[in-house]
Length: 96
Image 1 (cartoon, one colour):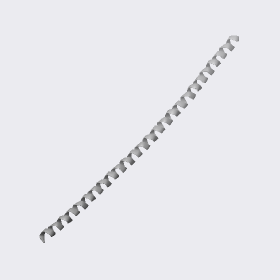
Image 2 (tube, one colour):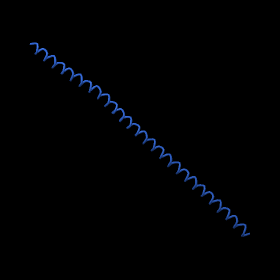
Image 3 (cartoon, one colour):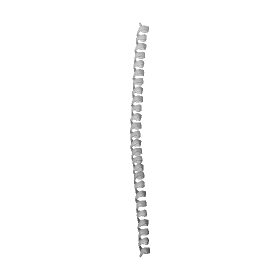
Image 4 (cartoon, one colour):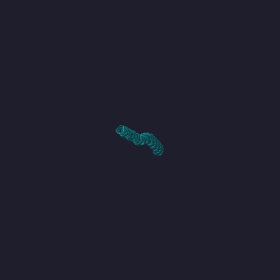
């Protein structure tokens, strides 16, 4: 009877030890998986924000380059028209 009580006590101790160990492992694993999940989510969010920012900067750069090209083209057209006007005036004076 005494041996049976000790045997049951040992079995209960082992069972409680395994249960506490299992709970401890799950308690540690849950925060780690939460941390990993949070890190993945933050990395995904930051990557998306970086892509949106890069796209915005790229479009703004293209718009700036296009505006500069149009301005230069218009300036050249204006200079060309002025030069043609001056050469026409010079032709009029030489014809007289």
